[in-house]
Length: 268
Ligand code: ATP
Ligand code: MG
Image (tube, rainbow, N blue to C red):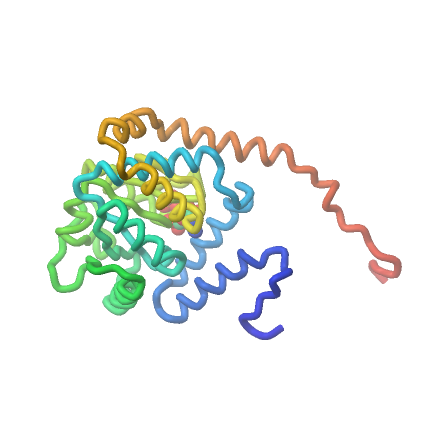
């Protein structure tokens, strides 16, 4: 097979294309090795979720769109995986809800930050915050690069949107009093448990869904948006995700997929 060629008829073609996208971003220096591993963990949960946006995710997406529209200082935090998967969609979402964009990396390097800023600008972002020359603010509790943020961005934000993020950093932002919206396919992760609104969905589906929800809600009054956020319970939403996983695992019929040996096949 020619390298990089995915036959359209391959049953996992879409998933293979996404892997290629990430590997290509890795070769460009946007994604790190750890990001590729994190993607694999996400894929596993996506398989179990049927690779579809389930009703609990759609509800979280609608709530997240309302929360972003309500925020005074919303910030969309972008890391390597998020940039590789949907830089353009995140730029559009930021414009729709009036959010700032900040590149915030667990494995920071000046070069990596610069590459991601360039990618976001090529996708239409006017301003992208990073650590750069503006000086840094520090998230209490977190040491080294892991805690550094832009003083005009995440540090000042009342609402932070993040994806494929580590649990420690999510919890530290909550402890600063921020509302955190997290996209995480794993409803058991510390990020999922710590966030204010957890979207258990693939970022690739969550971003278009968030954009559609923000479009639908952007002319609504604050009262209606506040109602949506008030009526939402993150623990209940995660419970629904786990119930869905339980039901799906119990309903799998393994016999159906048993391999039938062909004539002449088998151990010699
Ligand atoms: P935590 O630190 O929150 O306990 P973790 O250590 O298991 O989680 P990390 O590597 O820190 O995981 O973060 C990656 C998370 O992002 C994983 O939970 C993974 O399921 C999720 N993830 C990976 N790719 C995607 C994606 N495309 N969309 C949504 N979530 C994803
Ligand atoms: Mg982690």
